[in-house]
Image (cartoon, rainbow, N blue to C red; front, side, top):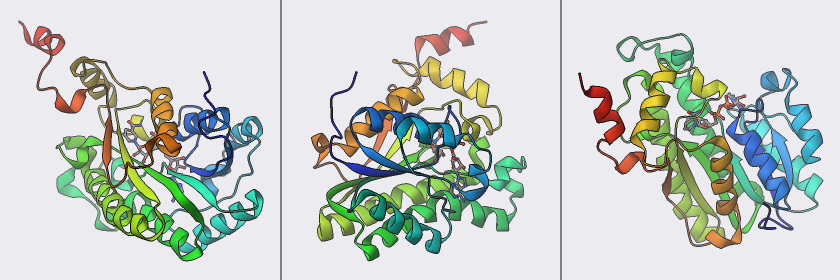
Length: 270
Ligand code: NAI
């Protein structure tokens, strides 16, 4: 059901790779709520072609940008503002990648060049999105920027390796830039810490299926789906959450505050 929450608003949505992507669902919901959007992804991801389908449904231009390149991000904002005929109201950062995870490296055997790449793609890029927006004055007052995080930023999940550090940095950037951008332009910056979700990035993590089921059995509401994540993100882009900033907001069905559940205790019974 649509409520017109984003009527008259414009936004940039990164990270829609395929129908399972969290960003894909956010794009559909943002469109449904009345926003005009621009889609972006790394040039290499765009070659896979699926984003064209989403662009058609959302009537959205696609502007390629490697999230590690300030030049690409500048071009993204400039072209987006041209397309909208004005500044942007919201930005979704839905970008993550760890070469160490992709290549199955354990935490005690990390390749440091890859570690730097993980941090650049998954965390520093958030700062690049924010700093470039500020320099170009690309975001309207009371605009909203959201990044997607995971609880490994606070609690240890052994197979999450260097992405845990990247997410901790991502959340810290939301606080630091949230302060700065709030003071300057009343732009709010938050991260949403999402349940394990079956996407390309999610399923790439070692033991994902077991870990997904475990989280689902711990959380009293079960794991939050990508669709429900999109619902939540849309509220953060809307005017209903104008005073929420510098937060890491858990969207996890209650997992983070649950010690143990009856479902998991039953599994332990011999
Ligand atoms: P996904 O694989 O669909 O999305 C990740 C996106 O990052 C892809 O579209 C990919 O092309 C993009 N990307 C990678 N390198 C890039 C670069 N250099 N420049 C621009 N884009 C680049 O997977 P998902 O799950 O939708 O991931 C979105 C975000 O949600 C990520 O930050 C991820 O860490 C986060 N997240 C995912 C969870 C999960 O279990 N799937 C749980 C909590 C957070």
